[in-house]
Structure formats: structure tokens, C-alpha cells
Image (cartoon, rainbow over all chains, first blue to last red; front, side):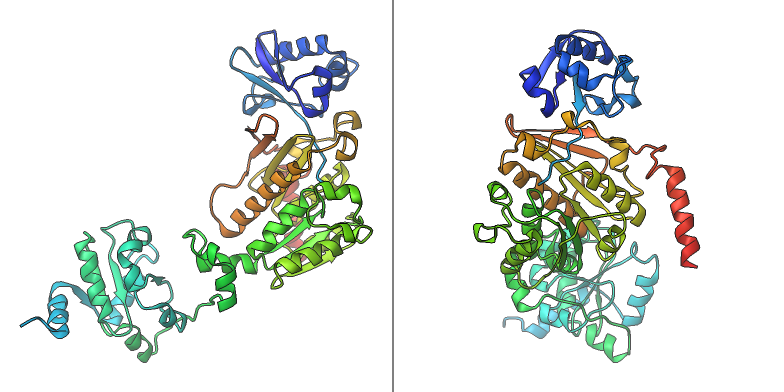
Length: 90
Length: 387
């Protein structure tokens, strides 16, 4: 189990800023989240089941593309952050 | 009989080392910057009329308090000078008592230095009004008069006079950033007033940049504020950015963010970039050549559903206040050259839990805008057109 930090745009759907997710890798945790929340799956994954290119995923402080991507191990004490691009400033 | 000044002075001269102006020059030219330190112990008004290039100013009355910051290494030779060689002799004795191994008084002082036709500089200083207005800055050792002069000489362009732009502009104007530009093609709307603190109710309907200029000029009439009532586009962005040292991104849509990002990389302008939504804020500082850029982090924009605007999802009014003020903080640090700007770091703020989190941002070597191959091409082009 690890913790996933939910981006602001999806918090209403998920109902919390952070949730626990099962799995031993980043990819498994995200898949668990997507399974529980169809809207999240729709926003984050494409039709082929791959994470959309605009989705940045961090494990603790590091972008997982510089670690082992979705195979990066994640467990208790780890926080997976789905980094949202936000445009607002006005 | 009690010793007279002459007695005391002669005694001090016997105890300290002294050099001539010529010997001082030789010592200073040997490994410049790393060899002997040069301290001017005269009063401020004397310093302002001219001093030896490279000298650090510590008036005699502040010597004990400030010397350790100026010269932390007690084994380093310290040449002290005053107007004629009297105060510097006493200063050398003080440093000796403080454990400095080589304090040296320059015989004849600045008076002899000038008489011999040696080079000196007359510093720029703050005038009386500036000293009063910025006194709280001048008191901070990391800012001082020199730092305040840097702020007055700096130029900052704010893209957006809204939620982020308002606090950023207010604090930069208050700090005395001498030249500010503000770009926004919008007019003030009543719904802005919940957070866009540059504007007022009586200015609803007026161009935001004019409203901004009115507020900022009232706060600090001594700086220049140029309003640009235009939409930033491909065909005007380079001209808009050119006169400014630093850019503050307070825009509200992805098109502007990408456009601005690409131009900042192309022109080599630091970009202090923040964004907000509901209760969350993000902030980072992009410095071309040092950090990545916006596209390294977000190569392409998300669909609208994943990135609603503040107009769609709302925003806690004070949230851009927090983030915009943090943007101004980053700008001031860049201008003053102090602290650690958020280069390569993304600061994320959650107002509800009142927590800050930091993510590491890396430069993508394959980035189409700032990747190594692209930057090399930009450099080659710049060199080619400058010939």
C-alpha cells in the first residue's frame, strides 16, 4: 500500500486529497485507483490503457520517468503524486 | 600624568604593522580578491566622496561588529585605511586584539592615495528620500544600500495583472524595482475584486494595466510602470520581453504559458512561473541554461477537464495572494543574488492542509524548446546574426 496525492481537478470525484492504494509499484497503485474511480481512469489513461502523456507521476520528490517509470517500487511511507498542469493565474 | 592622544597614537604605531600606498598596491595586486582584504574605516560621507576600488566600507565605529563577516579568515592580511593614517592605525590594533594575524595600516590614508594620483571610485548612493523609503531593506545585511541599488536598476515584466500579478506587482513596486512592465488585455470586472487586489470598485470597466499603473504609482511614485494593453502573441512577444531582465508568469491559460516559456528560453530571460486552482498553488523559477523549462515538465497541455480555469472551478481569493507574493520573493532573490531560488524545484502549496511540498524538476535533454540540440542551434543563430 502507498499513498496517492490526488490532483485538485480530481478531488471532487475521489472525495479526498489523498488515498491509499494497493500494489507494490507505482503502476499498480495507479491502476488500483483507476479501477476504483472510473472518472480517474478516463482522465489519466488513454483507450489502450496507457497513462496519458500529459500525466506526470512523481514518487516522493522524483519524477518516475527518471526512476523505473511505472515499475518503480512503491510501498508504505511512499507518496505517489499525480502532478497536474494548472493554468490558472487570474 | 595621563597619556595624551599623541602618546597613545605613538604607542599604537609601535605595536602595529604599516605599509606605504605603493606597498599596499603591490599586496593587493598579488592574487586579487584572494590576497589581502582592503577595509575603508572612514565615515559614510567620506566614503561617498570617493574610495579605493575594491575596498569594503566598515566605519571605525562598526569595526568590531562587522569585520568577522567581511573577513572571516583571521589569517588573511587586512589592509586598513582612513583619511590620513590615524584611525586606520587604531583599527589595526583592534584587529590584532581580535586575533587577526596580519592587520596593516596604510600610511597617509586616502588623502595620500589621491595626492599621488592613484585611481579611486565615487559610489552611487541612495538619496535621502530613498534611504528613508527603503530603510528596512538597507538595514538587512544581505540587502543594504548596494542591494537596494540593484533593485532600483532592475526591470521586471509581469504577464497578467490579475490574481497572481496583483500581489507580485504590489510587492515588487514596494521593494523599489525601478522598472516594471505589465501586460494584460483585459478590463477590470467586479468578479475580479475578490482577489485581484491591484484593482478597485471605481475602476470596473477600465483596462487592467491602467488600473495597475494607478495603484502602483500611488504606492511608489519613484519607479517606472509601463502598461501594455495588448494580448501577448507570436508577433509581439519578443519586443515585449526585450527591455526586461526577469519575467513573472501570472497568466491564466496554457497558450500564453507555452508562448511565454518558449520566448523566455529563446531570449534567455528567467521566468518565475506560478499557477493556482481552488486551494492549490504551484511555483518554480526557470532560468534558461540552468534549469529546464515549462515544456520539460508539461510537454503538452492536459485536456480541459483536467485543468479547469479559475472561472470554472473557482479559487480561494487569498490563494493567488500567497503564490503571487512568493513569486515576488523569488524575483527579489534573483535580483539581489541571495538565497536559493526554486531552480529545478517545484513548490506545491495546499492551503487547506497548510502544507508545502517540493518536487524535483529536471531539464529534459530532448526538450523541443530547451533541449541541448535546440539550445545549441539557438546559440549558433545568435552568434551568426550578431556578426
